[in-house]
Image (tube, rainbow over all chains, first blue to last red; front, side, top):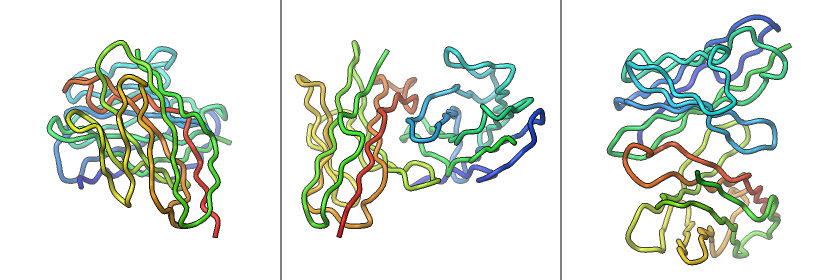
Amino acid sequence: GAVVSQHPSRVICKSGTSVKIECRSLDFQATTMFWYRQFPKQSLMLMATSNEGSKATYEQGVEKDKFLINHASLTLSTLTVTSAHPEDSSFYICSARDPSTEAFFGQGTRLTVV
Amino acid sequence: AQSVTQLDSQVPVFEEAPVELRCNYSSSVSVYLFWYVQYPNQGLQLLLKYLSGSTLVKGINGFEAEFNKSQTSFHLRKPSVHISDTAEYFCAVSKAGGTSYGKLTFGQGTILTVHP
């Protein structure tokens, strides 16, 4: 199946700094990518839908100024957690969609803010 | 909006026994249904999906699920589990139709633990 690569897999950052997470579709072009967040022992919650060349669509309750999403090419979307705080510690997972197939998930990024 | 309820948070089972993981959904529009498996600290792997057609869907690793529209259910089954099936399983739903494809609402997850 198609491959979605997410980087980094783990990151530890200091409170107040920003962290960028990359999501790449390696063997297909993804016009749409999705970003999810998973708290410990909880389900995945959709944060935003990222469309290539346009602004992301955020779900209710997600701060767009805190979670900056950029989808500058058909194979790359980035999520930047700005001014991170300990409560932003979570598992972030992206998925990429080709209109003719299902959405494929990346491996996830474990963010720990200390 | 869609919602998904996984009725069991944990399911313990012995190796080679059958298992059923239950999933109910709610939606005012037609939906697509999915089951994913997640191993610790990893992303999600698609087990199977229902888009249309036959209500019995067969997936990878010997899993199957049956779409029951009248009961709004999509239960996952496997006739004989292995130790390697120990993982967390998520049921998910999206609105039917191309533009919503991939925009998923997940259930709370069911942790399947297979004992020797």
